[in-house]
Every structure is written in C-alpha cells, then in structure tokens.
Image (cartoon, rainbow, N blue to C red):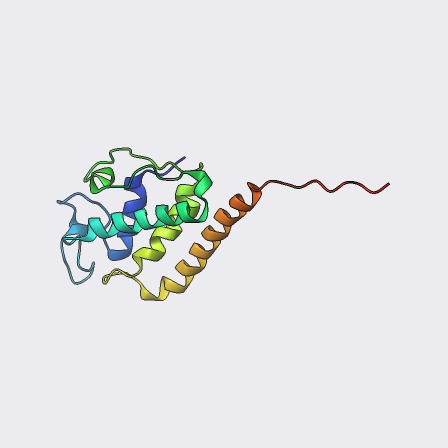
Length: 148
C-alpha cells in the first residue's frame, strides 16, 4: 500500500508531538507533556522537508522523473487526507522518501527526541544507497566476448 503525502507528513509531525492536522485535536494544543503542538510554520517546514527529499531523489536519479511538481500544504490537507500520492516507484514512499524527509526534518527546533538523529541519518543513508543501486542498474551493460 502506498503512503499519501498526508500520511508521510503525519509521520514527520509525530516527531514534534503532533498526531493529527485537525485544529481541534488535543495534540495541536501546546501543553507541558506533549510539547509545542502545531505552530505557525510547521506545515510549511514539513512540506519543505518532503520537497527537499524529492529534489534529492531527482538529483541522484534524474532518469526516474520523481516529482513533476512540488508538494504544497494543500496536498498535506488538514483533518482529512486529500489522497495525494507521490510519483515514485512503489514502496519508495516509506523506504526512501520518508527517511530522506525525516533527516531534513530533524533540524526543526521542536524535534523529539534528539537522540534519534543518528539512527535517522543511518536510515537516510540506506535510502540513498537504494536510489544509487537503481541508478547503477539503469546504466548500459557492456557484453564481454567469451574466450574460446
């Protein structure tokens, strides 16, 4: 099952204590136990992290034509999921886009927990190797004549 832009954005938002983009959701209200909640600029930060990951994919593997357009806040949606998907190979939403976006998102001032940054960097490295492997496999193969 492919993840939508909304679902990837929510997974990023959970790292700042937000569990829903619904303005009435308790996780969007600042509290001592849950953190800052959803603040002005957070959605834009999430969108920028996702777009940065997609741009990195385009840079690493230009032949994949990953993103024809940038993701917007409208693609993320609010309380409900508008169902906007990614133009990436099946399964890459979770295995490549999410780790790359999450690594970019670790720079957010409210990112929780800071101790997870090393593991997130490792996962982003794995995602980059996946993309490199695909690009290496797209190169033309030269046949070597057999010796007789």
